[in-house]
Length: 114
Length: 110
Image (cartoon, rainbow over all chains, first blue to last red; front, side, top):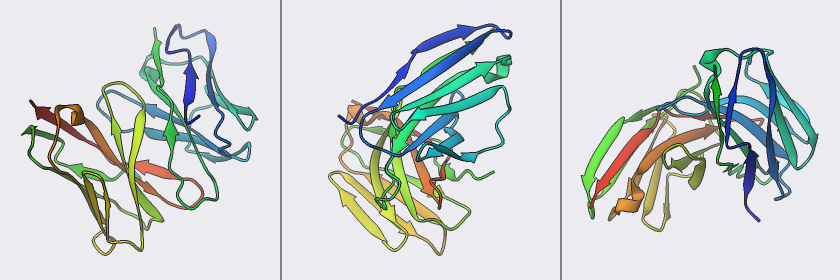
């Protein structure tokens, strides 16, 4: 199974809402990532978890809160978002120590903040 | 910004022709990877080249890496309509840090 799943596929939320994005993989990967991608732009790294511990936070605003409950799951909790946070949010996973670090991406969650 | 730059931004070719896209980056790397993204979907890994390698092949793909110039190129030979997508280079540094280039939008006309 080389699939990374993400739910929901689409999410519309108001600026006062709290919502969560979910990501799951069963490839035994111990690194998981959140990226944000605006239209016609490259993915921008937000967070990296390595062995379920947050290893990289690319100066992301605190209204985005990541969580890695176990080695297969990754969540992104959203609170008090702004319209400019509307984007495609991509989850990815990879090995940590294989030396190749090929990333496997999920299909993304299309987020619209109204 | 940690981003790399890719050129061209957009490329349109006829089916059967070759497509070449280039990537330049700013920092030292462990490896460089190329990914494909169909419109609005997740990215798919295509090929990886390590910092001590100069050229690599995979099917119709050929990647080169010049670490002295901090640049890489991706060649797709005998293109097909199904190759229409956006292509991104991604540089891998230590600690699972990946930074994507600006991307090339490839259109292959049947």
